[in-house]
Length: 140
Image (cartoon, rainbow, N blue to C red; front, side, top):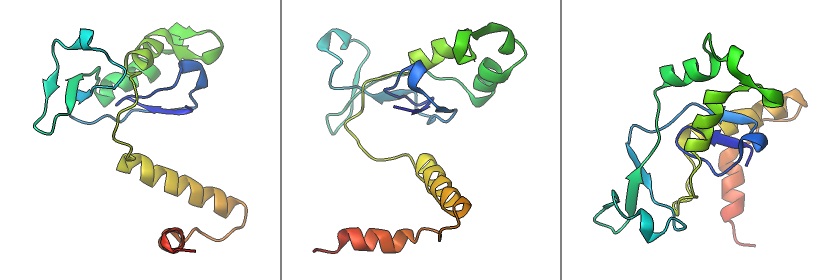
């Protein structure tokens, strides 16, 4: 995985290219299927049976200070150039993949804009997303 956000990810520090400072306001996350019953204490079971556990979190201000603040440059770790405290946070928010497979709307919009920007740099036409989806849904 080359993309991660403060909400959670499945990648490694070494593989990341982008770390998005976004996370939801919720204080829990969906418990992953690989998290065993040993972790059962502190779980919340919702009405629809989904189990949730508390998650690591930080405010945007804390994340900016952690990764870009005055002390961040002094504590950069090796070739990665990421502050040691930033690496520790990235590792804390590494979680098993959720069963829900949707994409966060912030990510979806960002990816769409990035694709459009890349197409324009190559002199290509902008992507007609409605047409592309329509074509995908058309039986062949």
